[in-house]
Image 1 (spheres, rainbow, N blue to C red):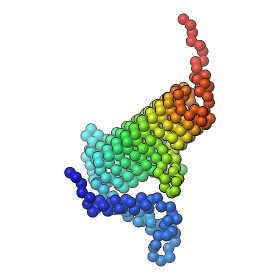
Image 2: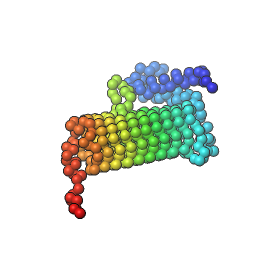
Image 3: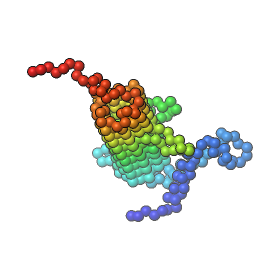
Image 4: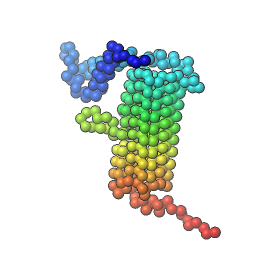
Length: 316
């Protein structure tokens, strides 16, 4: 059945547009917001926050389902017969701590949701939107996130970026996913990130584009074939035995990263920084692109000598 543009739907679009405007405006913008009487900058900012919260409440009310509806549906569901919540507008809802029991959530919109400590393991989130969602300690292990977007999510509860707050993507299908975030310490162990795009966040003020930051992330045994990690912070990241064939690592910071046994065949290493990185047993370096411009990378011959057998084979 063809959906019509109801009044509530139009109001939802207007409210979302207003929220995005509020979220991207610098604090200095709110100095010009008119409020009656002589109010301090703090009160003006508080008024702006109150307006933002009110608009988010309006959007939550106009979502396809409420947090209560979802909670009830999940309570009566089972992993063997998962609930189907595909193609739903589920924006700006408080879904923290919920066990989604491998629910079908493909193409649904979770933008602005609070998914803190939610169990989304084994769920189908293909083509879903998780932009600006709160994913502190969220479990995405084994989930299907193919072609999903995670743009500017909140992954930490404080400014110190405690790695214990990081979400878990172990064994997840992230092929074709679009990630623009800070996810320090997150686990992507054994995950499929084929043709994933992990890059700069959307410009907020002027031309400033914050780099994606994945310092300390675990990509052990992960598949990153033709993945785009250009200009990404990957300090202390673990890529042991990872498949990086054809991956774009240009201008990425791989300082102190562990690439032991990784396959770098055809990877683009142009201007990448390998200061202190471990490449013991790494394969395909001789076919990598941009080797001459990579920083702190020893000549390929040195790695070949380093990985050569200690003793010559015995003659029979």
